[in-house]
Length: 537
Image 1 (tube, rainbow, N blue to C red):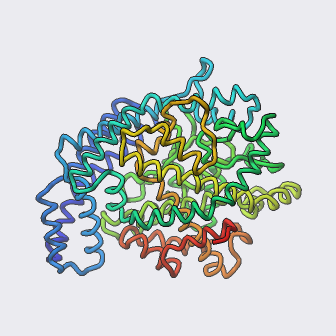
Image 2 (cartoon, one colour; image 1 turned 90 degrees about the vertical axis):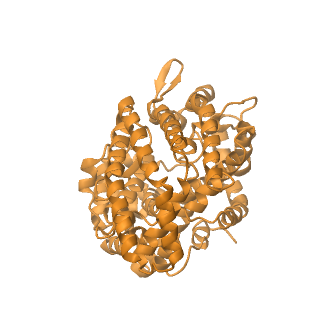
């Protein structure tokens, strides 16, 4: 029976491999250029890929293998489990698959090529962020913030229609809605997830209220208004998902005139995780028609790993490069001997954990000092501010993630609800940001993840928890108490060795929960993140 399954998998992998590679190559091209031709090719190859998994005859064979109870070899069992999950979601009519792909691809192309227009001039996302960081005039801030939401108006109705189609597909294969299906088939328990989310909401309510109160008082003084009159455009990020610079410490000054790509390359080299070849294949410069976001893509599961970014000398882009190349080294150092289907991270949660573990260093005082050779004045100021900066950054992100997680669950339960009101109700509940008076616009639709990476944000939130758990193991086991607050992980090959052996190498051969247990000695434990935030349980 195992030999039959192996033959089945070999044939399937041989079909998938060239289609997946072509899909990723055209996706890369479309992201760089916004080309209609490349975008069409993405839709064609995505459809071909999904149609393979819609084959009902193959699905029946897989279930027969599973029901035989004769598949005992661990790698075969894991491949069988993953294939059944993948096939389950695709037991759909071909025309439905094609329609879903075309709808999502069309929306993504809008995001790739859209530029906000403010006072008659186009603005990139980077330019919008610069204004929200530095501009003191309230009306200019408001105009730019509203410009950042213009794409939402372009795509909102298409996203709602796509949500209906996704729900119909989910019901076709036996689920209540797309949200439920997405969690179940990605091996995440919905009840357990929301127990964690609800616990974190309760634990962070008062700490977040305090730190945001301090931030609001600072912003109110800067803009010459009462704190209760602050609105979304007064924060440094259009979604208030990132922490602004506060007080006297200006992190961006550290990165001015620096080659952030070289810094990233040298840091990973010090871990024993070379990224020279990955940088050569990447595209890191801002250009017209290029996707304004950042991502990492593994083209072929054979080491062709690339990063797209729009780098500028700032703390935000330093963190982004560390984050994306965290994904990249995970992909590069997967065990090449693994079968094709297992040559991928254990889960999106675990690759996000590595990305976040690396990205956090952009706010770490020891890492900054060892990397940029800070002046005594800079070192003293940043050291005094670093813990609170991390706490503010993480609390802001955790609360923002709660908005996205709750929003998508409710959105897929009823895509025809008053989505605009739902969005701002959740923003007020979790982020304590007051909605603009009289505004009834689809601001939610300006968040690209809702259309292009749906039901994803729980991976970020759980990834933050795993990052804290891994950091604890690295600091106290791998480095024997000489952890990140002592070494900054600079020239720390032991850290790279640990990650390569215990996180990267297993690939998808083990369930994500088991991977965390093997790497850290226990299952996922949110307490490590809670402890880092210095909040009482």
